[in-house]
Image (tube, rainbow, N blue to C red; front, side, top):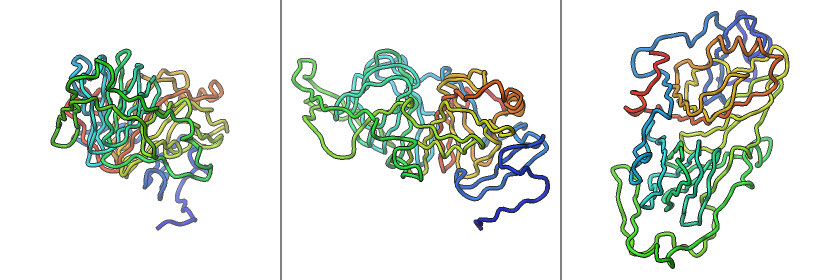
Length: 366
């Protein structure tokens, strides 16, 4: 039962996530850190284990994975993880799509890890660059035309992605919808290149299905309404910070769908009050699987491996090893910023890794 009064038993620090005095800070929390919690103060590192069986953390270098669209213009992204609420895939397209595409099972949210180019949509063209989130409403017709090889982390919901409800800071923080880029209609169909048959590939469970049009599918003269694609760059995201406590991941929420939340962990001032733990505490996020995609940056002088993809199943301890935490304490006065760039996707239902992901696992807990 939730209560304003939190109990204390045994040896505990006075402040939450601070002044540990050799203890290991382990949070057992419900509802993705927004519900009931228990902070357990341990003698030993709870992530120091070897796992047998399918429920174990996975770490993969995404540049070691091979989506077929990297070599074949008619190829597809590579499925990484799936559950009934979402599918997470990796694309590394180099050449323009020789077809148009339409995801008909749910909204699509793509993060641009590398590359530039254009998405031709029926609402109009959207250019993209590294750090962009690209939102494509369910059943939108589009085509990707990369300027160079483009790496996308793609999250398809079987529901509608929504901007989080405004919290106590107001509707513009941390995600201000006023700075998104929205396409202008650019109807196609008059050029000689637009004639002939056009294929629209429908991506759906049990598919794909291909529609064959005798006219150009991007022939929209204008549009109105509140359902449209857009891009949003993480450079425009307002990072919420605290000087005295490391804030939980849910503070950095970007968009959400049923059973899926997407967050941005971005450069920010480091916590400055002495004794505060700057590294995320150990936890097992008992109600959510966690996906972290490392876009780049450093953590207290240590480079983050760009493209590293990690999966932490709910109920299984994970977090930075104790040596990294000790270094953060030792270097407290040497660094006043955290320069990481990490994209996180948390899912209410367990994710199933694809065979390709399992084969590429670095085996850190095997």
